[in-house]
Length: 210
Figure 1: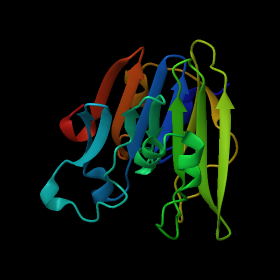
Figure 2 (figure 1 turned 180 degrees about the horizontal axis):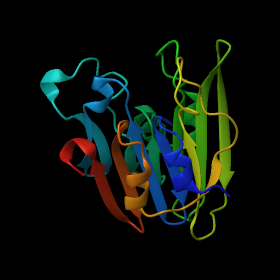
Figure 3 (figure 1 turned 60 degrees about the horizontal axis):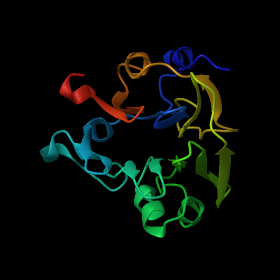
Figure 4 (figure 1 turned 90 degrees about the vertical axis):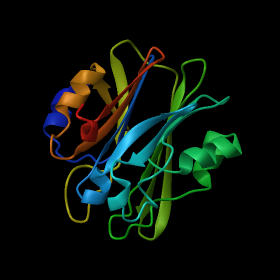
């Protein structure tokens, strides 16, 4: 099992990341450009959405403004893009993921990462990524997990140009507290963190001084 805090401290840019554990879900966003960093998480009735911190300076919103977390009759959906809405509207996690593909941001071709936590504590994690002109869709199903353990997936392996996509299965990691995760994220690149622990939601936004 990987020490998640050490992993974050030594990885300055995993991009966007989802961590699912027992009674806990975390989602964070990072940014290298001003446009990506000019964001906050805001609460919605059924989850959260990204918003511009300074709307007057927002450039292209197409891939950075979306509804990453939604509580639905299916369960809690968490993604790094507007595929959250696709999954919710189709009423099926796999069908929703099969209807989408990686982001059209050549040369990075950022993967779409998604997770759903069902009412019984089981969960699924998916990544849709570029593979020589095709979309490779990978799905992982978990029958729950132990206390203080989580499974983590991110968009990128680390920094680079182009950015290297995440490879392999979701990582089995230790499950820190939300504050510990926020503190471990790279200070220059972190933007926002959503944490849902035992049903209690916490938001961290660098632009709001968190």
